Image (cartoon, rainbow, N blue to C red):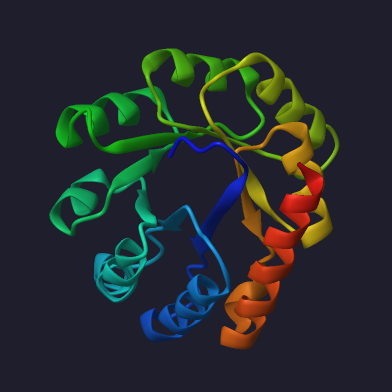
Length: 200
C-alpha cells in the first residue's frame, strides 16, 4: 500500500448488506482512484464471506487492495490481499499464514508505542486515530518521523481530508455518508479527492 501521495481507504460499514455496499463501491470507483477497501467481520462469518464475494472482484479489477479486519484465515481462503490486525500476536500469526507478499496492516488507535512496534515488526501500514483532541498531531508526528505508510482511521469530511493530506497522511477514510447510496458515494469521493489535491 505504498503510495506517492495521499489516497483513499474505504471501510465497509457492518450494517450494509453485500449488494447495497457493492452499489456504493461501484459508484465510488467511477468517481476516482481508491487504494484500499477494508471489510470487517461483523456478525456471522457468512455475512463477511458474502461481502467479500460481492465486493472483492470488483475492487481488485480496479487495482484496489482488499483487506479483511482480523480474519486472516478467511482472507486467505477468499482471495483478499491481506488483513488488518490490532495486536502483535495477530500480526505474527497473519504474517506466518499469509506470507511476506500479503498486506498486513495494524490498527494502532492512538498508541504511538504500538504504532512504532508494528512498524518495526514489518507492518505494511499503521492506522492511527485522527478524530478527537490530538488526532491531527498524531498524524503529523508520524508523517514527519516515519517511512511506513499511515492510514488516518476515522472518517473525515472532504475539507478534513485535505488537511490530513497536508499533514502527511498516506491514506484517509472518506465520510461515512458515502455508503448511504451510489450518488452520495460518487459525490463524496469526488469532493474528497479534490480536497486532497488542494491540501498537498
